[in-house]
Length: 326
Image (cartoon, rainbow, N blue to C red; front, side, top):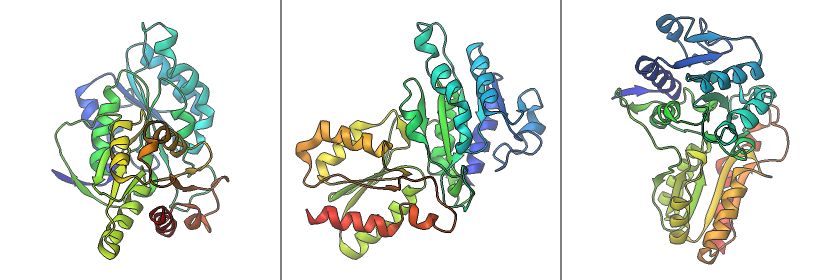
């Protein structure tokens, strides 16, 4: 076991798989000699060379388009979008090419590729550098969307993503890249894509989240248990497409109250889908309305006001008070 940050765990996963599988090709802007804007690919150019760690032009559509072609021809590309807010340029390649290739070809071809993209707020970045756009891609059948919140999960999920036969969008929380360390195995391991993690078991409320809000929610659950004796079950989805509804429904049937927390805007967010599925599958288990604590329906704000825009502890506290009154 070695102490790692999330960005170190990602780098280690890439190195591990590149050593094992010669089909892994990295491509993206500044990922080679510079090691990427966040140094997630640091030293991989020196170790594997320019044919396997490819610096590309500033052209997201070309990066993902090239990756689709590579994947269709037997390689396993790992493409980087420098910030998720720039991913709109590659929407056609992801949603209408990579995600549909298995269906379009009648199963004769697949697109085993990973697209890595940093996302999320809390780092005082300018416009288009902090957007959480997972719902746009969770809505694209054939595309898996993975969002780790810890170094251990980041390595295990990225290894699983690189071995998946279909395209995976792997979203990396910038705020957490170097926020903390935890022990990560040096050896190879995978975490199943589509399996949520119950971080803390509880009896009174189910709190569902993913990405950076996991740690905000964890602090709230610990404080409420200590100060108010409220037992909150905290679930980290880890994957928003596909969703682990089995774990969610089992928790809802136990606690009867649900709060969903995410950074993305409220309307049309993944939280809305989770709430709808709970209503379909476990409506009669609920003792209170499902509440959501999310970003607001605006473009990501300036750094001066992002703390109030993000789902902070105060807003989660208010939701807990409301749901427990029912």
